Length: 107
Image (cartoon, rainbow, N blue to C red):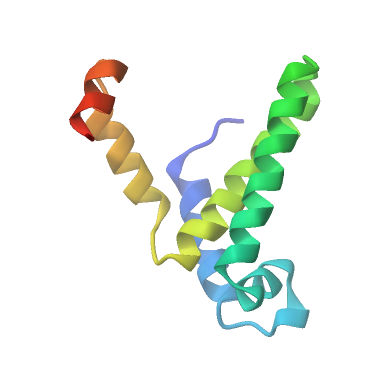
């Protein structure tokens, strides 16, 4: 199975729908109700868990934790009114650029 834009778009649609849901009805709705600081904190927790899995060379756990990291990144993006396509557009903009050149262009 490969990841594609359809999966991202389907997940984005669910995340948008959860904005209107009661907090007790879904995990994502409860995150939205708690606010961006809570969402960002959860994203940070998932990032740490991803790093730990990588450092332990645990392939399956790394996949699992990265999925959590991506998921919570998408929750944060949706909370900010952004979509996965916004990030994909930025990655496309950077494609073919040296990482050093791209970083220097931001300062």
